[in-house]
Length: 282
Image (tube, rainbow, N blue to C red):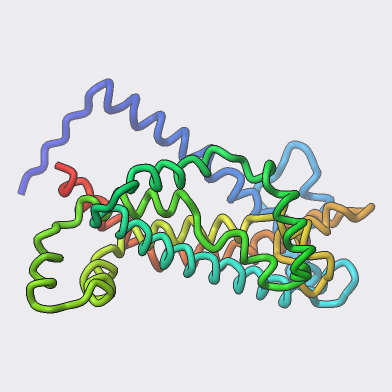
């Protein structure tokens, strides 16, 4: 089979732009990976040499030991896993239920409710951060998983994403299930939810990443070393008077592994399902 490829100037320009974007996107990641195996002296040397002179595996030992040699890294990364996973699960469940109700049920004030939910996206987190912190203090849930998770149980963006996706879901399937005597909750669990894998995977990844990278809120509610998250742990290296850049890069590389594994495990769902979503829109 002969495959004829026509190279035109617009295609070549697009390819150059995409390659340039790929280069600038991957450069910080490549720097983190290579710097994790370098000594601090080699990292700060200019011009930067991308190839390590020797592999400094001790950086990873220092990253796990911490500045105080208390090995709190394992506890902190476990905290991030618990918080991020809990927020991702609750966001997917609550947003899918809310989005399903807004997309497939007709009731008075539906559009008003949806617009009120969307209006919360216009409020920056910094504007409600202090009131949320005061609520946490009143409830005495600082330095706890509840205090870290409670403000992020559901997101307005997740509701919007699920609602827009479920609007394209064929209503005929739901009507057929109702005729067969299936209840609304059974319809959601057995028909709607299993057929939303692309949007669920996307929402789960975004929710997990949002909490995995969250530094501001844990700084407020987690003062105990045992309840800190991984961004706080990494920032502690920068707070030291003599910063160990190699250990910092090693800690950042180790902290990136769970996010990378999650993305690679779910990527086939939202990449494979994007074409289905576009075909429904058409």
